[in-house]
Length: 175
Image 1 (cartoon, rainbow, N blue to C red):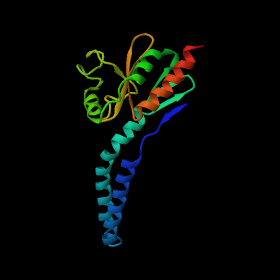
Image 2: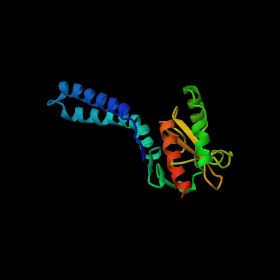
Image 3: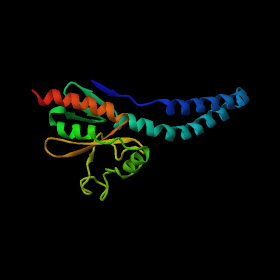
Image 4: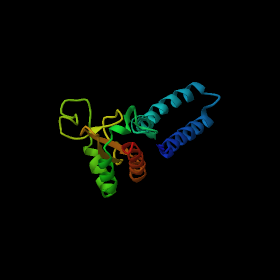
């Protein structure tokens, strides 16, 4: 029903710059200094990996799939029968946050396994997916389960996600 794909622009730019830099270095050093070129390639690869860590983390922990009767966020699976349709409707009717609001919310949305930073200790919603925080500037949605547990879900397209979730929970709640 719904799949939230992660953008690949940042990753493509980083890899393209890495390849262009390595090719440029190789033009002057290969074939005379191939050992030097390989060493520099490995050194610059160490600079590339941190640049790709955030997109890889987002793909693992914030990927959203809504299939059949299951909501998958990162490594977690939530049956749609457990999601409170009223909370989804309330989130859908809520105001869309400005970019400044998204940054402020994402900086405060931490659920790390460290004393004092757990969401339960701070009376905040539990971050779904397995990550420790909402990525900086990414939008997030708070919904609740039928048992009353508040869930925080990081999303790239708030309206599309909540519309699909509302349609999925409406079909479940009627049966």
